[in-house]
Length: 177
Image 1: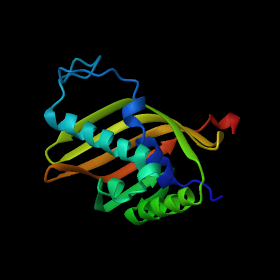
Image 2: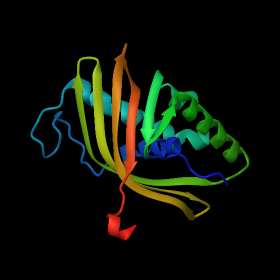
Image 3: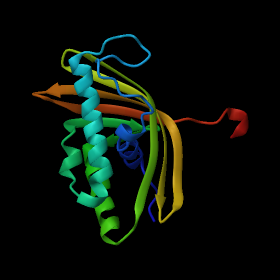
């Protein structure tokens, strides 16, 4: 089996945001506990993340790469644990995942995302969050990570597209390495 790469990590992290934020829903447009009203664009940005997450969790069933790729700008560039990623890397990851699913590999994900914060300024927006996730196959945990991500979006028409993201796993203190 090939080792999991940074694209997999980010995709799996984002794939479960709506189910695992640990944040209570609010109907007033106010983020719980902050007292600050969210703008309509911040709500739409969060919905974009939620929609991508939904498509990510459905992907093993649908095998529809475009349902995920449509969230990325053509000029997407990311960094995961210090390694660069591109849209081509995501395309390759999805293609490889489809191949593995077609071979019958039962791949599963358990993830939690917390401390989500969004901001929008004109046609640009960003989101930061903490993540904790596990990737497994057939009930065996293959990888478990915790870390932080920042994702930058650009509004194009009615859609928020991912321009850049930067995710890093949390390292243990130096004396424990």
